[in-house]
Amino acid sequence: MTEKTILRALRGEVLPTPPIWMMRQAGRYLPEYRATRAHAGDFLSLCYNSELAAEVTLQPIRRYGFDAAILFADILLLPQALGAKLWFENGEGPRLSTLTTPAELAALRGRDDIHDTLAPIYETVKILARELPRETTLIGFAGAPWTVASYMIAGRGTPDQAPAHALKAADRATFSGLIDVIADATVEYLSCQVQAGAEVVKLFDSWAGSLKGQDFTDFAVKPAAKIIAALKARHPSLPIIAFPREAGDGYIGFAQATGADCVAIDNSVSPEWAAEKVQLTGCVQGNLSPEHMVTGGEALMRETRRVVDAFAKGPHIFNLGHGITPDANPDNVTRMIEAVRGA
Ligand code: 1CP
Image (cartoon, rainbow, N blue to C red; front, side):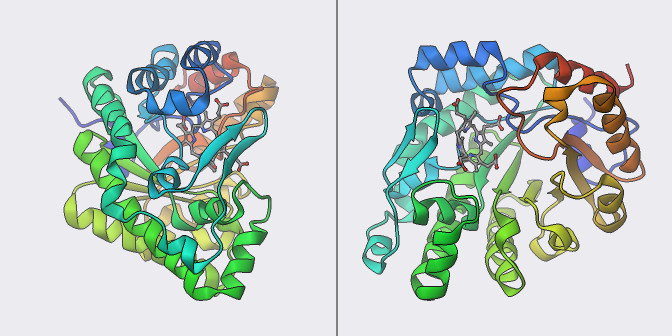
């Protein structure tokens, strides 16, 4: 069998048609997802129910035939495994216990004590490794330390990560200590996903854009480099995708600085810019705006072709610039895939 298309792109091959998957492809825009989630009871119960989590991971593969499936889980399960309290407020989003003191940092579990909580996630990966079509690549993931820390410090999602920036300024030792604890635990977590059958892993640094100057180097680049080096030492052929969302110029050289095989690009930069500045040095993933999945029409077709054409000269995995939103029209996803595959 020839190698799976996503793995070929991640090794630097330029394919006539880019492989395609979509961030949040298992999600509330799909009626079958909403039904399974209702059956599970709530979002966290769905994450920790291996059979149902595998089922929602498979739903978009069956419906659309994407080239990759991404494990259904959440970046906030790792903080929970480290000892943070985690719950989801209906209609509002995640809530966690806050962490702002040295004592709270010291009370976290060690990296070897996370696996009891996370065992169902590894089981989901095992089920998927068995049940996915043979041509579909299985992607595991975790949040990057800065993004995960921003939720652990504030106890919730914040538009500007102000509480995390404040702790960084007020108590550098506690802040850096938290980044290190998350980075070390992330290596163990992703390594277990790989042992269970994940073929690629992706690091989501959704809030990297609020790190400026030296902070971007210290808290986006360095932790990613450390995690990637540790993972590659254990799994030398493992391809890794890094997503420093809204990094802007920080995307330039990010793959070389971190050792990532591919940089995922958000839609705040143009595909032409990213092709010229970022793709020169390796595979890129992205970057159609998710709003086209809501609005559709001519613009959807035009912008999809624009992304494909802009990245056609180098290795490329087609994706959105961020997750598909719950108000998206599932038929627009079909049109996007047809436009990419030239059907
Ligand atoms: O109501 C629901 O069903 C919950 C919505 C939802 C879903 C579908 C959440 C809550 N998480 C997920 C799954 C999820 N989260 C995946 C699954 C795989 C897929 O992509 O299909 C992944 C990769 C994530 C990662 C994740 N969770 C990120 C990083 C990517 C991103 O979108 O920037 C972040 C920041 C989170 C935190 C989170 N989890 C859920 C929400 C609504 C949020 C954001 C909250 C906030 O910042 O206010």
